[in-house]
Amino acid sequence: RKRFSSENVEFNGVNIEVRQLSLADRRDYMTKSIDTQTKQADMLKLQVYSIIASCYVPGTDEKIFDETDYNAIANSVTGGFADIFWEAIQRLSNFTVDDAKKN
Image (cartoon, rainbow, N blue to C red):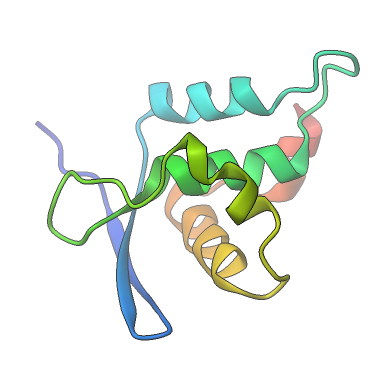
């Protein structure tokens, strides 16, 4: 089994492992991020669901977040932990905001 790439990200003294996702995992959070009316990716949903899918306790398969954390992540301060994790996710997936807007 292929080991996916990961990046350890520290925020406020807490270490989080941000993992590269499989295509299926990426499809799942992209699907949750599509606005049903416009058929466009909702950037907030895209960012939050990708964070939920990608962040782990380092060296384990235990996720840091689940869907009950959606509002806390969505309402976090700009430039805070969510943006730091999102930047790592983009680096690992070769996926950017511009890519999402194209779909």
